[in-house]
Length: 157
View 1: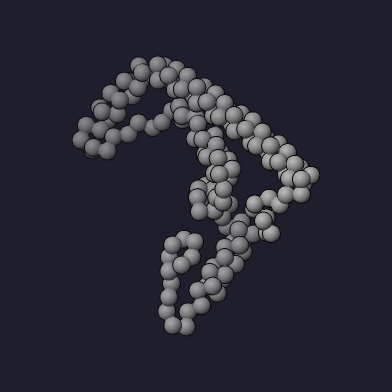
View 2: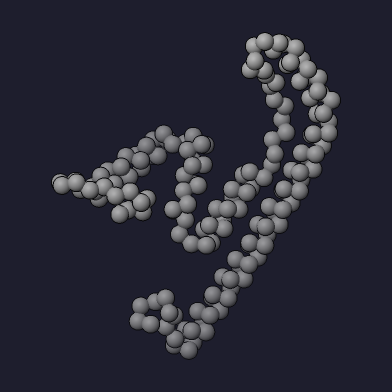
């Protein structure tokens, strides 16, 4: 079974060759710019199976938060799907929206500010502790080197 969880099996089928051929085709298309569309890039970034450790996941999660932090407060087209009385209903909706727009924009602007501050705070905490962890790991490695201890994650331990 491969990483994706799909099992291919039949007499005379070389699964590894098929996967390698697909990967080569994708690499060629990436090189040619076929996948430059932002939606495709976004889908690839959300491929959680490619995230190998907690640090990658935290970075991925923070990037997703940063990308989605702001509420879209731009104006939008008001339409009506019902053909009957559509003109009257659209005019009514536009009138109601014009009355509520100021309050809605103010509310969403404040929410955007709070969201931005929260994400910035989370990123700051993540960077702070990631740096502390790197420093501690380096310190442990130096102490192990001085003591002649082989770390448990290395061969010969």
